[in-house]
Length: 163
Image 1 (cartoon, one colour):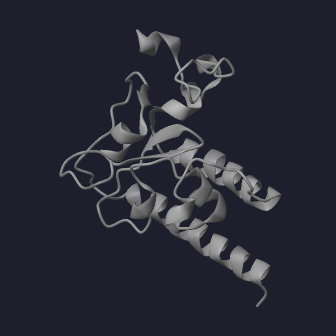
Image 2 (cartoon, rainbow, N blue to C red):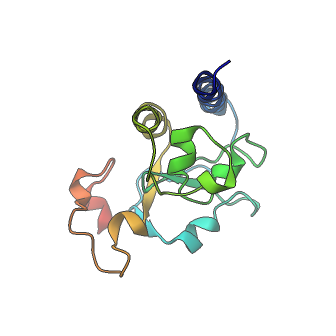
């Protein structure tokens, strides 16, 4: 099996695992129920790390493309390495390697970027509640506002919920 063929096979397996977790989660009685209508929040990396599933009765969050999702499925989910951080690169590459657990998409292939968009749009945005955004999505590295960020263009954003 070629390296690219093996990579595709790994992606298919990981997408299948993620999808099964979503489908099975619908039948699981969760201890934490995400709020239905709360304002979205801005998460720093430090704050997001607190929602990694280690605290009992606390929700589990992960971010993809700077969007923070409530993925509370239990402590033993197969993708626990992805929680408590922005794991955009790992999702794009279908990887659980520590160097891929980052928001940085530099150097990803067109196939990986397409896979990222498909998983983001077809799985996470449709199945998991959005609870906020990461600071690097909204702020520049120097802390100044990212002028390209438009809250009204973000998924599930409602200006009335912000006040």
